[in-house]
Image (tube, rainbow over all chains, first blue to last red; front, side):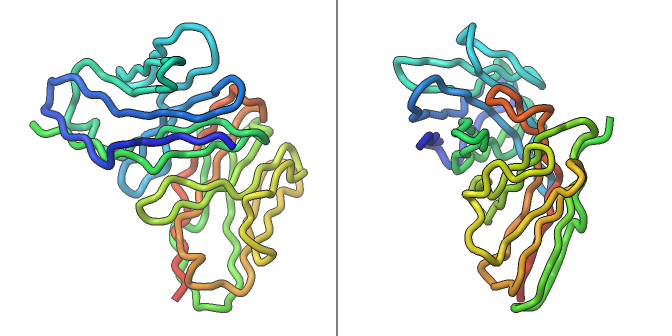
Length: 112
Length: 115
């Protein structure tokens, strides 16, 4: 079965600094990878996806993610963090039957 | 345009009662998904509809859980004889089509509390 792992429960970064939220995956076949963000008491919002093509994927709100096949990673990045980026971030992989398999999530805290 | 909507936003019920949770997908989306999110965890898949039919119900935990989508739009998740362990946020998502490359758009969820 497909799976993803988010090794960090929480990431702390200062406003204006670059941020990285890590994700590694385990799949058979080609990976279909996604990042979602969840704000308190709200549903998940789609940020970006990797299906095929360029390893650097650009998404919403200035986020991007780098697909690395040799390291089986799909880390989420942003060049300059905002306080409003503070939220819970989920990495997910598409499994057979089209369902998403999510990681446990990483809390991002951006301090001013 | 309007996103995925879910009603009610909160539901408190007593152990043993029956509950229904409703999902209105984005207009025109053919695929609909239900997930369950427990505190401190990522969402877990329950069931996937393509049109009116359940294409994958492998995530339903037991036969107390059932979902329908009779006209290929609105879906209802039904839970019989609720247990305290059913307490969670139930998320609905839809996508334009059911293919692997299509992203899913999530509703705000229904927080179910079984007392």
